[in-house]
Image 1 (cartoon, rainbow, N blue to C red):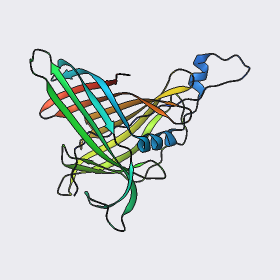
Image 2 (cartoon, rainbow, N blue to C red; image 1 turned 90 degrees about the vertical axis):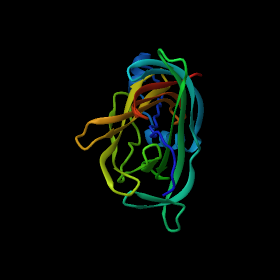
Image 3 (cartoon, one colour; image 1 turned 60 degrees about the vertical axis):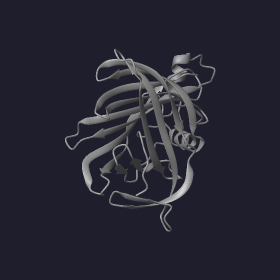
Image 4 (spheres, one colour; image 1 turned 135 degrees about the vertical axis):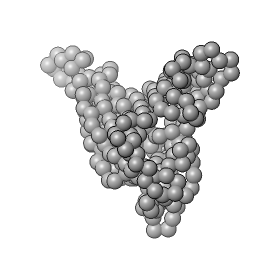
Length: 252
């Protein structure tokens, strides 16, 4: 299996089209009624990639922490994969055509009461369906795990107030056996300024009892053409034996 680091990929998008008309509707009404091309926005986001500086705030083991970092999603490239019970072969002849994107978050933070900063880094390798944008698999090197998703459908359009589960994948360990954990990808849409909406994509890792053990959220603002601007990413879970709840906010 080809190994990578990874944070999950929590990808999120937002998009909004302005309501016009002679009815004299308010900006609030326009924001609430706009339809967002969610599927195309997610495909655009993957194909384009991003590289942003972030300001980091949050907690480590319950103690306040601040710092800075980078969020980099490489532009997706076409390849193939072969899946076999938690083992993924990349670039295999006759494999399934996919788009591969590597998502990396690197944050240097100082915990309250500590003099030396620490670096928290995660990379997620995400494989998506070229036509539908749906995730097919993820590789997480930090935990030496793979998540495989059955086929699911991303809504073509959504509007503020909409939310739902996109897909639920099965997690496998490095040896190919199921860990008993699952990963659920959710979306929710919030109203923003006219012409935009905010979409949060949330990846929840759950144990065999259904309890969330790692929660990653990413919010983006997207316009009516599916063009996105990264807003923030939050990672709440265990990292290197510590309970981290850190948010990287776009500095722009």
